[in-house]
Image (cartoon, rainbow, N blue to C red):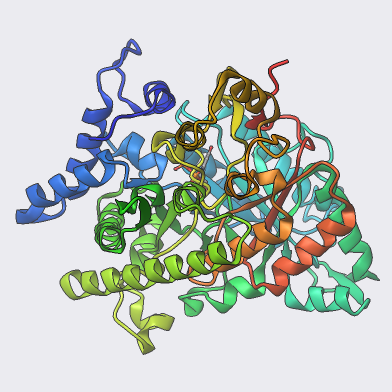
Length: 567
Ligand code: UDP
């Protein structure tokens, strides 16, 4: 087993290791990895001991970690193991409050939920009791938000939601502005459901029609650009709304005969059908390397073996999962969607001494993700031969190509907690800062950290001393330190020093070979303009990304990560 960092041990103790009724820990991290490996191998029949050993080695060496609910709940009674769910909302109180109840149950079990509110009739529309009028999607989102606030995810983390409203809904302006107040709807990420027709209307300065979903009548016509400007203004000010590109998403819907994809999970990495859930897991790229002849290179053989084992691991979870609702079980086991992704991309680049802002990094991103996708598909094909294709395979786009065990194989998740457990950088994000204080979401306590690879490199170059340490703690970056060469500075560029173009190019490079989606935050310096935000959102659509999220430094009150300011 790999040694765990202090941060990792703390998080595991706080939220992942099993406690008795008095709240006393009754599990060590090693026992947690054993519990998970044993449970995930338990459907392997006569090969279960073999796979238990392999799964244990995979996760305890931090080469791959499944999403948090699997680490927390595997092997426990009625263990719910998925991070991502989508629930339907149709235009009736029955549907609204049925999904609200189901969302509460999902949150309680550690999962996050996505909803598209566009089928709801707009505010002030007719309702059947003639004396009253409808409240509209934003009012119901507020109810969902309040419920989420009080159902912490099994007491382990805050519930997360994605709320989408399509760009032709009559309440779209209210929705776009619904998070202007920093405290409002705080348990939701909100995204506007964008179509290609709308983007063409914006680009050609055309009118745009808002349509009542109940009557299908046009209730308002306005300039597409005025809506666009409102989106940009609000996103610039608060980070919300993001965009989801519904036509792009549906072009790669693996099961179009089962319905259109209307929503994603909370962080956007998995488009899902109504009641569908998905299991995620991420390969730690900083462990997929070999050190030979004085430099690091990618260990493609280890990577390939890791992918094959990880796909099997995620497929087993679908078989072993405890499903909260029969409807969730039915569609999830019909499509068997899984999402294998990556974490530690920035650290891999640092180890290979490749700047994030380089063509070489982008080429490697494509090469790497192409490899991961190809091997994931091979692994799923092998599982199909061994265990059979997913039940809806005949009804899917894969029927013309190859036998598959899973309708989708890859997603790039934010890895908000598992990358801390694996002690590596988040997902495909650049380092946020070389030093920072982390504010715990649950306990609000702050901790200071300096990046370990940075310290190691500085020591190697005999540059590490107290003065440098203090400077880095204050600034979070080395850009103004004269004694450090430009080449080294380029390798250690942090998120806010990286032009948005490179953030988007990395998202594009990974999206190209990801059948689900890539969750990425385009982190921007505070002085970014609204025009920049408009360009970023337009470029995201042109690049065929499935969604886009920006965050301008300082524009939200409860940032999880802050640049280190000790004084
Ligand atoms: N998620 C959630 N609550 C949280 C964080 C995440 O429900 O507080 C869900 C959400 O669907 C998100 C997914 O888990 O898209 C993956 O997030 P992440 O990779 O950050 O989770 P981790 O496995 O690292 O905890």
